[in-house]
View 1 (cartoon, helix red, strand yellow):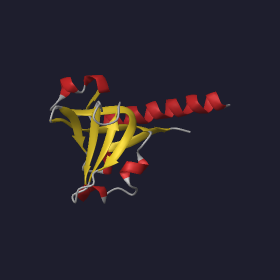
View 2 (tube, helix red, strand yellow):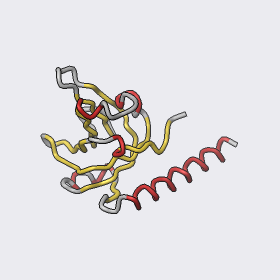
View 3 (cartoon, helix red, strand yellow):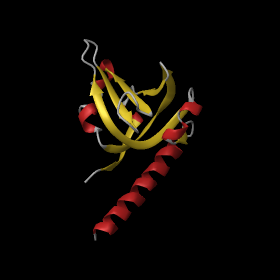
View 4 (cartoon, helix red, strand yellow):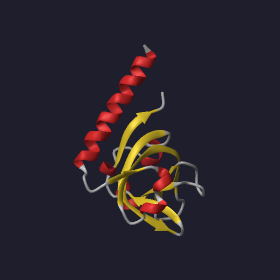
Length: 130
């Protein structure tokens, strides 16, 4: 029964992903291993957020790390304080340990790839750990 539920969830996740990507034809689906060769492109990347962090400075920034924790993250989703209020939940808590699809323009910030998240619609949860 458990395996059936997981297979059903995986099929539903893939279906959702396919529909989501078709709705965004300008975004190229890539893996974390392809981020450095796609800087400047609008992309969709589906993977797990392994760590999160909220900066301690006055202008708080939320960081969502993919692949590995900072400073070795393969990709970081960056949410500035002015945009955090657009989310129903605290992104640092809500997205941690979840498999998501993130979309946006890949940028290089001091040699590290990042996507600036201005809108909650840029992140879609596709799997939550049980």
